[in-house]
Image 1 (tube, rainbow, N blue to C red):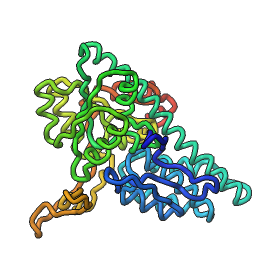
Image 2 (cartoon, rainbow, N blue to C red; image 1 turned 135 degrees about the vertical axis):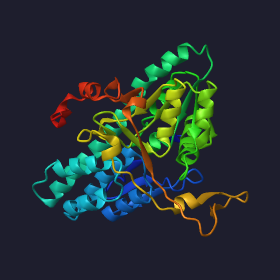
Image 3 (spheres, helix red, strand yellow; image 1 turned 90 degrees about the horizontal axis):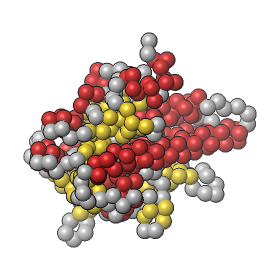
Length: 364
């Protein structure tokens, strides 16, 4: 992604020493573009847990780089435990930690460090490439819709942020949108604000604007109304974990969008790289762990005042209590298709495994 004429990924090693991991601070967006330095595995854990980095692919890459930083002190085993405890829902995190652990480390400490660096960089590079491929496959869907629009915009509704900020680059749900825009297709995005952390209003709107894609922010509850009135051509969201049978966990509120799309015959797609699949899980409702976050995210909100100050204000009575589930699960029957780096398939076990036959070992 280009920011003020410079190409950025969301995470990278600071050259030439390669001992510092640098990230775009997503807590500061959209009001400030800031780069943070992560020097220890504890720094990485804090960045993941407090959402300086967030999004399925990015927290996987961050965890991989956290394991690399731990290699300098030969503490990868303890680092793996710390990292896995930061956020439970997204499968990419544990997948990346397990892959780093399984890479095999022998020889001198310097050789182990270099092996960890190579593996972590490979995970980041693969995430970016997989997202690029997702964009190319999803582009074909948008092209078909555009043929019937006669120059009118293809209107895509998305929930939360599954753009390049949620991955190392390109994104999952927004990658097809960027690919379509770059090909000259008239495309417009309905951006759910995505309470309570407002990742849509803060992050999706920011990155779409930087790329030049037209969008409107809408309240989370407006999507069904737009679908009823024929104002949505397709829905694309990302996912934090998808089972081998196609159930998908994503940001809270995604399930309601899927229900509205089904009712109004609007195609509903999940875009994801293979690292988001959990091939050991079948029933998403029963098996996917759902993170419950601090209630203050519901009772308070941050924003910019008319004087330009960033402040947090309370939304409710002083004595109010709140609950804050971060994700919900959309059953496979509501999903029109899964857009992956290997192609598009239905959200069912047979079709998923036709794209990923190497994971048939979990079939039992």
